[in-house]
Image (cartoon, rainbow, N blue to C red):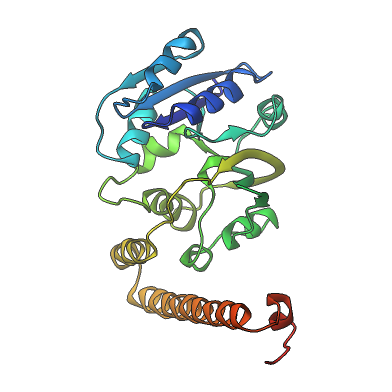
Length: 275
């Protein structure tokens, strides 16, 4: 079995249907499909039953969070690679898996392009770590200070989870980031970037990540795994990032308020026109 596609879901029946249909429409057939449902009550189970013959394994039960659900999927996975395609995410085309696996892949981690779907636009992921992988450069701890690899468009060799462990369930939002630090930065896992769009990531209705919790959890990981000098660097760049975000929010709010009270457009402000 070449690939295990793992979908986790909780009360997102509409998104689950879209995800299932994008998976079962693939021309590539050397994969298994695993669905981990967190005990949904919104009709998600009805969706699963509709496609039951296309699903290799599924379970619906209460879990302890997103990484607990992902770990359940990993334990069931028999494929050489794992792809985490959560409910609402869809594969780019019916042929995308065939395009990726029409070669004898030997890499530990394969990264494709992620297309983020906003209500009125599509945006390709342009993160720092993502760009460096795209440029063929080695990823470093610095790249992961302010960024991460999009797991929705990343194929992870199943053996890595046996070698380095499953996702650390102590963390609520950065366990995948920790896994990439352990495998890529600390142990030199081989990364391959493929310039193909792999996944549409639907961000509509998704709440913003708690930035304070993300910084706190990442700091704890760096403190445990890396020398004090690396932690000092992280604190320095985290403060720069925090100050920049605060300044940007302040300036943007100020500009909008001025635009609303005066006969001047937002575009005028960007060009430097004064009131």
